[in-house]
Length: 281
Image (cartoon, rainbow, N blue to C red; front, side, top):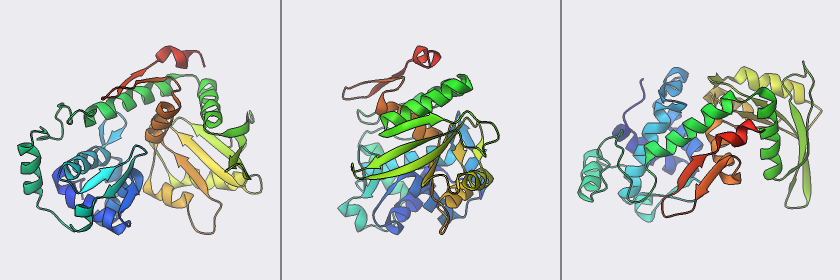
């Protein structure tokens, strides 16, 4: 089936949170909705504009309406959860929700509206800065992208980060050590590749084969988007675990670590991209 419109995703989004225990990340919610609606890989990969899929874009609007209706809330770390009212609500009348939001003058009448969301950065702007940043990252030289990933890992707590510089190394681009809680250390091998399209499960399997016996964990950083099969393969029971950072998460991490991204702390986030920073990598 094709990806439903945003108002048709309100009940699936609500039910997904119930299924996931009352809270989830955006990616967990997407996976649950995909499973519930039996969406195909083709449906899930259908692009809205730029690097944003129709599913991601429309679910973002569905969540916004449900939040305005008082059923959902979200934290600064991107975790969405059911409110007390949401915990007691298993399904909604989408027309009732849309009329309520309209009456509250939030002006969320159309999924392509450019109106501000009650003082918060509107959904279109949220995706636009990410698309612009990803396009910029895709245009920098390969060695600059490797240095960007190394810097990002170091800013995120990794030490002894090195790039292997070897060809034919099974997809392994580098390695590092991450310490958890100042006590436990894990050796990690990583791959950093710029993909414009979806990253399949075959990439995950090839990378896992190359990392066997060489590290505790694997990490793949990409500008693309992992298919559902790829995400399932990365966490398959009995196999070496591989963490995945897709294009959307990469932009969020660059914003969080302020690498080439300036955020002016105001009531409304004013996000700008420093293109010159990437040229100097």
